[in-house]
Length: 179
Image (cartoon, helix red, strand yellow):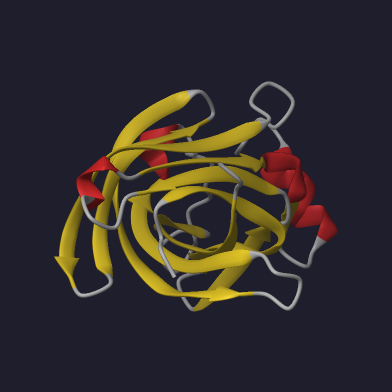
């Protein structure tokens, strides 16, 4: 099956997850439930491929509604003023096999910085409904302070409530579009 063409992220088969250290002793994970985006794939010339992803900040879910409300507030994402997180790729490099380095701009709170995603094509297939699908997984670690996510509290015994380092994982299925 050819990977050439335009693919749309399947809204019901994705996972955009983040993980941060909490109180310097554990990891808190969260996810965003609403993600949209497209990929243009060129298997013959991967450098011509690109991706555009939009994440709805209000769809954040850490399995704790009080924490989710705090994360939507001005202390963190300020979802009323900045309802979306976006990633727009600028270039793609082959890293070997089905692995790629996807360079682009990550925008959070209206602040954009370049990042490089370590991405892997998990495979191509055809669904029982006749849709051609592709699966991807990508990871990146960022410093949340670069995007203005600076809220924190110092701990009496040392350290802080929330680490600066945030690990992000994006997994999704995309459906090939006609044309």
